[in-house]
Length: 124
Image 1 (cartoon, one colour):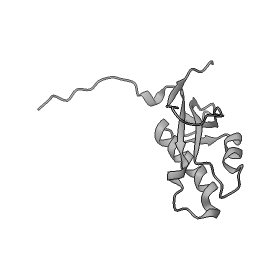
Image 2: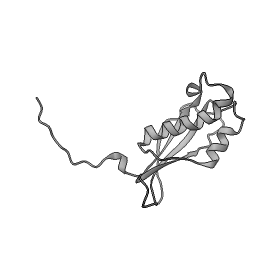
Image 3: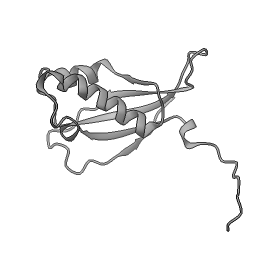
């Protein structure tokens, strides 16, 4: 049996980081009724951001919300490119030390082919 080791490593979740992801909303909205598609897309993006960034507090940017709803309640885009930014919470009496801000990223005309998850350098 291997001995139990306790490494004093700081959690990777504790650091501030920004990444770009492509979310396939088509598979997440399959089988959802037309009148529930755009609201469910917002919930699915929040769930994705919570899982990837490890924060309970997820905030959706207003431009991302407009991009989701641009073609109406039932015409949600099949894929979306989003930027997830894990940031420190300025509110001292908040339960969460970190929050995730989700913003929309415009993609070039040639589409989503070849795009991968990227770390984005932030200037603070």
